[in-house]
Length: 190
Image (cartoon, rainbow, N blue to C red; front, side, top):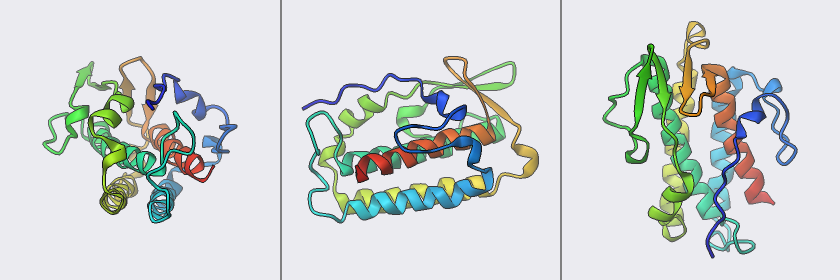
């Protein structure tokens, strides 16, 4: 059973709480992001140890394994994108192959869209090994958490633009990122 692609513009979570998962960006300080990132990764990794981690709860909804693989890739992409945001360089050799397009307009990085659903299919999320995904997820979450923790106060106002025109500061970028993780922990816990 295929998944219906998610085409929502989730930037609204920066201006109001998410009714589904309870995340409230207005109550999330930038300083809390590293710890909450690690907590979300640990919760998803733990879900992969449970029986049925490969099973979709209902047709058309990702399994815990698929959510964990997605969050691993979100962490990797946002780690790269944070680097672009802070350095103004898009030529990092560590860039995930599925997020290679970054261009600059008037000195501001413009981030390409990432098709998470295409990546899930191409990477066969549901066929990956749970133990490997859990390990990679924790590593990717630690890397982005460390990157957020290293951002100096003066860097919090730097901005980046998404290809649809949405503009993020480092703080709103971190909040937007964290909502994705928190929301998927909620999805897995049901």
